[in-house]
Image 1 (cartoon, helix red, strand yellow):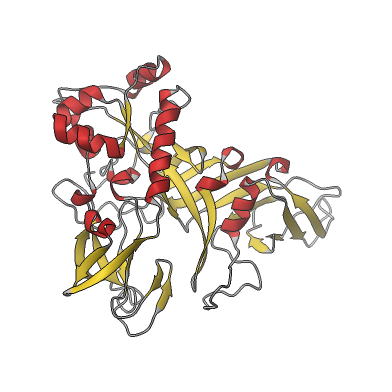
Image 2 (tube, helix red, strand yellow):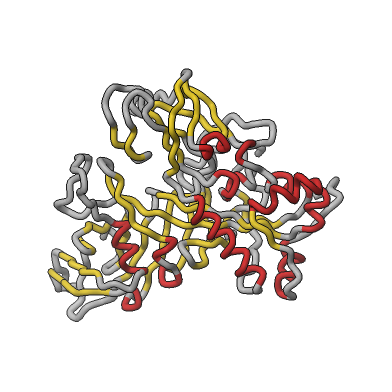
Length: 391
């Protein structure tokens, strides 16, 4: 940290947290502090900035051990409330992915009003304390002779249940539109023909990786708010790609960094871990994530002062370009424009809508702030920072 007038360590900040003396603000609050006092003074004054996001994150799921039966079973096929889980692990270990639909539910078909139930809903039901029907089939072995098991389980019954999400908290994402003449149904929601609407999906200035664009404080072992409980960053997420065009402030203009995260499902809450159905596409899981950013110096203070007017993303046609792997941008817009309710594309005023909940993201940042202020959440030292485009 040589060359910075303000220099702190995570250990020093944790001592202040333990003593109840740490100054903690949300990413929203930090914007005005940096604007009015400057990054140097902001770095002196603030110790931690909390962030938040709440959005469908399709690359999510849970590792579950459902316990041994008598006689024992080496499960080969498993269903939870009719949703197939992956059983190619040990005898009673499974992984349920949030986008796996219940067998018999329509997939990639459009039935107005049809409710698609899948892995994300199973996870929500578990954290809600509901009973879930487990069915298992096996071929039978000498050590595990049982060939079928059926029982109702609850989260508290399970010996082990860990949320493990391979790709969460995307650092920026496309704004999706449709230039074709037909309505299309995508993971970015329903897109009306002829630029009838534009959907986007991050919490902008509150989003974790926008507040640390070069991952100077986030890495393997970073403690986070996850699904209403405590979790950890375990590695870069799949498709982590920091080498994208950036603004003068270092913010990626396109989808960039991602996080792989892990946490105890038994400490989570359905308000921040919610199964969702996306019409004509399938099912997913809305995940709440909040990452604390320690303000170690004025450079990090500057990054956490980011606002929606600083952040840009690309408007991409999901009718033709995206399915064909082209992803050519039709326009570049700011998150301030997106959150205003409309953007202008090719001379046309197009209404915008978020798939993420800004209100819930704000709630997460506030909740994490409270945990830290009350001394119930200490920062962790990352064992290795995420790969950055500056590497």
